[in-house]
Length: 232
Ligand SMILES: C[S@@+](CC[C@H](N)C(=O)[O-])C[C@H]1O[C@@H](n2cnc3c(N)ncnc32)[C@H](O)[C@@H]1O
Image (cartoon, rainbow, N blue to C red; front, top):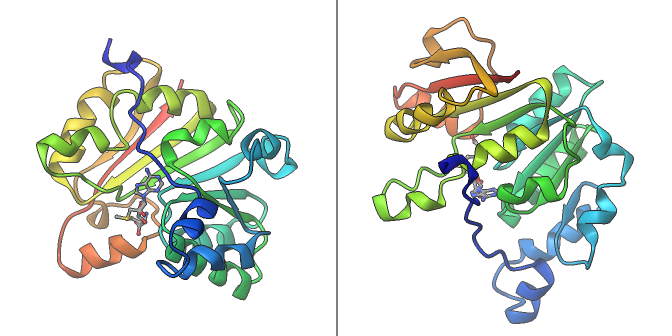
């Protein structure tokens, strides 16, 4: 029953509204407009439905939810220039940093979306994702805040809708409790099967592109938990 609950969605102010409220609050909120070819965002009426028609989004797509400043996407896209990559991120500064790196590297197969990952289905067509990564999502460690976690039972609905048949989902985290509690429902859903499960990614043979946060945790000697699911 839990899986049928609607995923709670935090309120996201649109860039234009933020500018109107306080133009000096965050200079990066204006700078995303300099990269309008790479960063798509809420703020324009019906932008999402228009974007669904953009050829880039027809897939197959590799998606990174909460992509930070884009190191992972940049490396992945360089390794697979024939694939199309899409990153979701909330923070303006990280989006600008990511876009800057993509421009500098002349990487043309990545787009970034300034939007909540929870509403990814409003941007992406059903069944068009071949691989979806959630790398080190905010763990919301306090019990009363856990409802804000991205990975929760209702997320499986999003995942099922986005992934194509045989599509894969990868979740990496340093947070043991987040990982263990997520495994309970990730392993229990018969629409997916667990293809890899590992409690210390860096001691394993699993092919891996490290993210910014991952390198930080690695330098502190912390293990990285890893699970990979495949849609049946
Ligand atoms: C801990 S960081 C990890 C960044 C990157 N994935 C990495 O591994 O280096 C989590 C990122 O997710 C973004 N984020 C948090 N909640 C989000 C949401 N609901 N939708 C999209 N991005 C989100 C944050 O702004 C932040 O950049």
